[in-house]
Length: 147
Image (cartoon, rainbow, N blue to C red; front, top):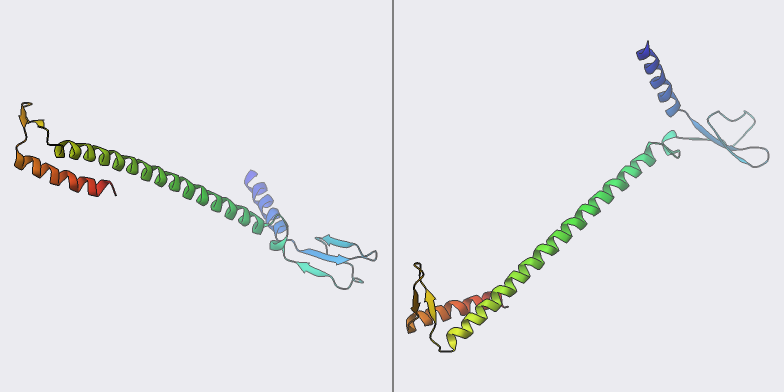
């Protein structure tokens, strides 16, 4: 019994949604909009499609479109902020690498004795060939990170 009542209610709602809407002007020049046809003596009556009526599916699609566009803009904004944050972190890392390479290069070019530690933790001093090799390597790092 409940299913029959539910089916009847849905059928009635479908008929109401498909109802025709009429617009005309009465004897007092007042615009009348009704779901009933105008009287026979009225001229200039026009039928309005139900889809064009306010509150119909067309306006709901518009709201859905607005919601989807809003969510798209929101996602793009979030992705843009994440990209800007990532670029900022990379720039800070590049700047730090630049400063470290410049300091190390300045130390090696100063001519002072430079001590390094090997894999066993023992200290050794760079000879002239090692110093030249390290200077060339640091100059490449400075050129890559500082421009």
